[in-house]
Image 1 (cartoon, rainbow, N blue to C red):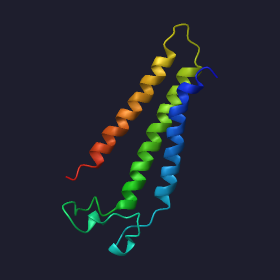
Image 2: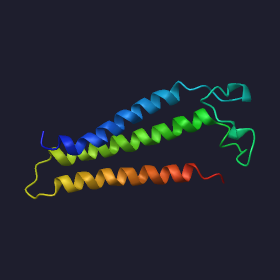
Image 3: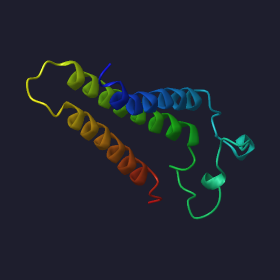
Image 4: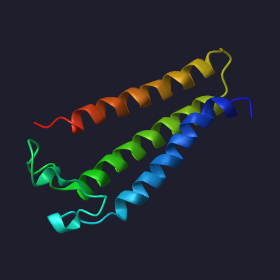
Length: 118
């Protein structure tokens, strides 16, 4: 119970990632311009980003959601492991916060790399 507030942000993030994965799995295929009903983006068929990567919105959403969920589950698992392991030295809260900060950094870098048009 002592580490509940420290683990809460990571737990909520993982729950959001589960919802995001569910939305990505139930998304339309985005194979043609006729699929542009709000989920699919038109950038695959027109504009400066008309490349193969942008044409596969559903596939990209599944890849992005699974990477987010994997990283979130790994960070949550490591945080819980650090919280429950017996340790004579202090600093567990600091280590849990560092793990969660690394998760946010990794997700930010992933987003920057996947949003690169080239």
